[in-house]
Image (tube, rainbow, N blue to C red; front, side, top):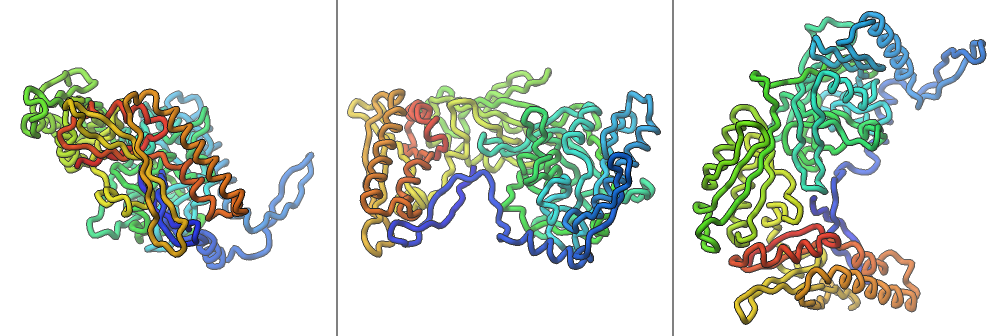
Length: 535
């Protein structure tokens, strides 16, 4: 999850920031698609009268006018794809090693999946956000190609070859890495010799100071609702992306959030195809030479060892264990654990690691560990998976330090304050901070914190829900009496009460995780976003 910053007005119409949790961001300006399409249509001479075609209705040939927006080039190409598919069916009739669907041929002997696509005609140096989208997509104006086959059938073709379906990124579940086996993709114009094929990645160039090369793609297999592949939907409707998109079929093999990638990748001369030209995309599994899968699942359990609360990074113990035979559990120091994982990465494998933190570890040492993991994690190293149930994601210990001060925050999440008891134990206090913007002309709100002891955290979630319901009713009553309840700016306090789903934990460095994780778990249903500040 990422913090997306947006502007909103307070009840006095002063501008202020607001935190919203966002799964993805679209940094493109509004209206860009319309302007790009208009320029393309004008340049391509499509702004003209309709196109006449003949169709059979009840045995009679009827002339029908297709409006310009129905893309006459597409209609002709779809007819060509139908003829191409029929020819493939006739050529491979009776061959059990070949699977064919409209616009797709999967050949087990050749180890290829061939997909028919249409060129969008992107100009050289034009922005590439997608390398291929579906025919229903609204994003073709920033895609190199449009597949004239369904994404679901492309998945079925790859799996016909024996490629296992992977898993796309799911930021809401702390799954930030595309997971799956690799696929190479080449492109050439339909009708030309296979020798004219070139890597699909050669069709784009990275303008960034440190460009990232894409030699192959990860078969993540999109996300599915029943038998419906989400890459076949209208938006974004992409099946090969240049950034980590939760619905694609083929993702880039590295961590690439949309906001960090957009605008960086542009069309090369090799990627210039005439608009409407028919293309063939050839997908080939890119296996390791020894035949083992690239993906390998590992667990890493970190323990304090004999040092207990006095543990340092050097004394921490790491227990690593893979799911494959020959990767049995080994106990090392932290350095030895990382070296075991790095050794697999050097062999071309992708270790996906589930991290478990022993709750006797102190918050201070976990913060240090998180800093190390943040450096180790990467395309050439390990990929950290979502944490086990009830444990925080490791980056929760690396929050934005600007949020420590309440007045420096865009809004006020709930807080848990961890402190010592007179007897030397630990206790947690829940804090709600209410903002008051009622004064004329104020630039910062007045803050009123209210503390709630958490002696029995398992009973507190219903109390929070009841508290928010009471506060919401109070705000509604005040707005109704003032006659301002239908004005969005005045509804903001009410909306904020309902929307905040974030918890900030403030803890001394020597407090063990077990001092506050039971509270975090108890509040997880209502406050799933957790950031831990070590004081």
